[in-house]
Length: 203
Image (tube, rainbow, N blue to C red; front, side, top):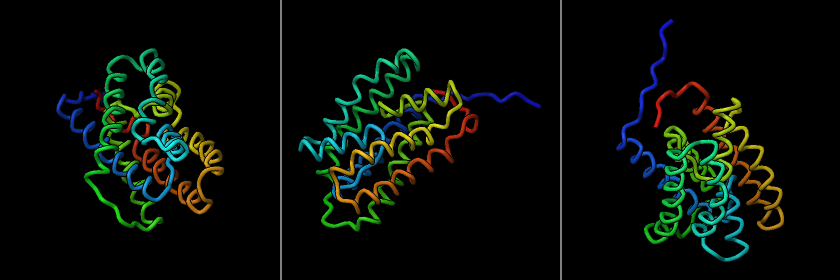
């Protein structure tokens, strides 16, 4: 049996993953905000706070993530932390810019759920494959997967349902049900495609 050689990502590969991954997530968040849906993790919490406070998603997302960088530095190292900080910053900026780039007059809520979750899950997968998170729960999920062999997708799924319980008091029940479907789609994408040992490249 031959040893598996871990190939290291090149700088331009990391840059492309950060750019396209955060663009995908930002578009997914725009679609969700237009239809008053939620995702999970810190992004879902940020959307929830934006609905309550009236502040933009990008600002809430950036501020909520600040405390989690301490865990990122201590447990995941500086390279991961820097990439994650950049990714969070890009999502915050792209989320604001995407609203001026894309004008959504109407989008069916069910379609919004599926396509928004697909974009978000794919974007997160790109980032995870390059050892980059989007702060908050993503940092904790990646740490648990790398050090305790806990599937990142399944851990996030449990956290996301807790966020949905809180959302019950904020958004309509039909949108809450669609949000739960979206969370399942996002986390199944990650759980199926980001299993420990399946993708060996390093950043």
